[in-house]
Length: 344
Image (tube, rainbow, N blue to C red; front, side, top):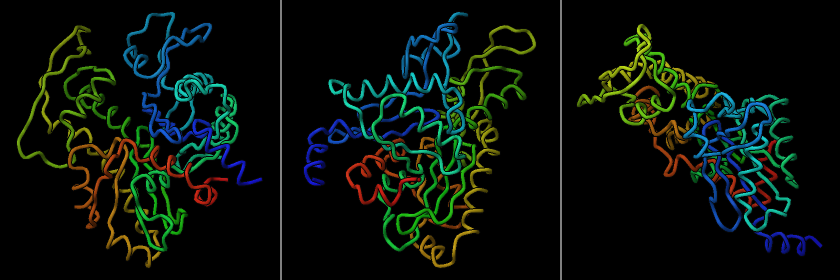
């Protein structure tokens, strides 16, 4: 009976989905096809009826620009669901698009979740998945999924360290024998980098900018170490004194200064995890080093900064934006591994 059941499930390849439900972006992996959806975790709705107007990229373009009757929201905050109804509607839209012609199927779903979330927060994720007609739901810690997606030997009796810097959380974990031996989750990550830039420009230049502008500044000028060749760019915002639009020239040193407190907090979490790691696994990490992944790991020279501070080799995952969803995708193909790494 078991073989026939698996044969049927393999035939219905669209019935198994892996989801990286992130604060900034949601990615969906479809068994047999790979990554089929990569969209910002944003939904635009009418305020009164909560009717969905747009999701993903289309909704992101509406951020900060909606009329009074509409609102564009990010349903997740710091890695957990902050707006249950918006999260449900967003996920339902994404899954329907991912399943395509097989939208009648009730899929088996594997979802990546932050390591440090509470039982109540886990239940919220599970409830949303059930509400959008998932047949079976498995949850895997994002750090474990990211390690699998990055190709680390998670099932071996050796220590591997992964640092997943997402939009809302940074997950630091030491993994061995398909288990998380030590972990730390802080709700400081890419979004806090953007907020740090907003606050810095407000305090130094008396200029108010939006989140999308801050993200653009981070991508263009962000640097974790002192830049060798100064770079600058012109930005537009609103003067806080006069309330009028104004242009300002900022440099990459401004951005480094703005980001420094966030980077220091992430490095502190890494050091605390290392200090709490058993000696035998510490010896493995000394040899294999640290792998960083997630959108926040793309900050220029962050790998060098972490290496300088920890005195360990640090490398960025090959596809840092996709590590978690690639990991849950690999787990979909390995039921034995799924049973070992899923969160009960």
